[in-house]
Length: 163
Image (cartoon, rainbow, N blue to C red; front, side, top):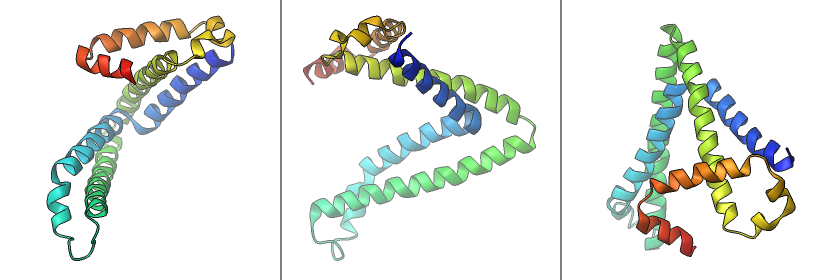
């Protein structure tokens, strides 16, 4: 085991610790809120930007401000909802189960992040480095990344290869 193995395992452990600290409900809600925030921002930033034509002259700045504004508002509302749900879970004594499942979710997220990082790094000259070749874990994470990429449509995979 070399330094890269320790670093990759460290990322998974940190993600698992974040998961246990936040709990499954908060972790999943956070993911849903981010997707909703970005989606709503993308869908409605043009309409919101039109309301600020008198205040912001530059169209690109107006669009960016509208997008960021929508995202921030949705994230704030999501954080409030997350706090309320977490408080309710703690009071109902389901907090231990929530945090235990958060640990599993966090570890899984860490594995996905590490596998994707290893995949992206494999597109660079890094695989020729001695530390890469001597790693105990990189091969397993490459296999996990290959499996995950198999779930992605071929057209998207082709675009990734061109980057």
